[in-house]
Length: 186
Figure 1 (cartoon, rainbow, N blue to C red):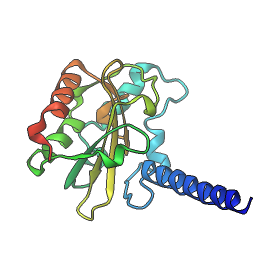
Figure 2: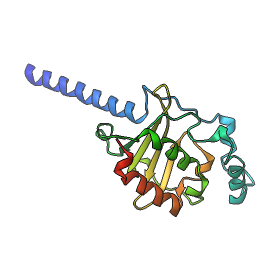
Figure 3: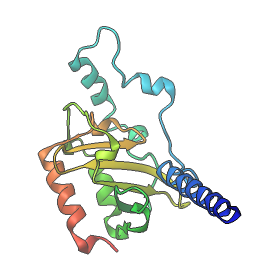
């Protein structure tokens, strides 16, 4: 009986540690440095009374090329690609070679890679996600990609250049090739 009790306690502790590790990894709890929008900045990109779709899109367009809203609002020194598989994604990451980091961030800030379509998917449906790191080694941005069937993205911090998060045919084709090109990844 005592032996069973000890086994259950050890098992409970291990499950708790694994759950905490999974949660902390998903939230970038120990190494995040996001520059999110303030609440007043967020209001500019939310649906407001009297809006129609065109008014909202016009507000987004005003900030397309404003560096203050560029993704991820910090100098990126490293990009890591993860398959979105719970618990093991952090063990199977690939690092983008330094010479391609600017190309990736330029992709994220190029409005022609995104369209205005409705985004109705969940992050757990994404196939990949990328973490972008600043010079201090902290996570300064994260972007999820649902490529196969939905062609959607979700990023933190938010950037108006990504419109509502849908990938254009050009953007979808580019990112699929970019991720599958093994010469770009360490």
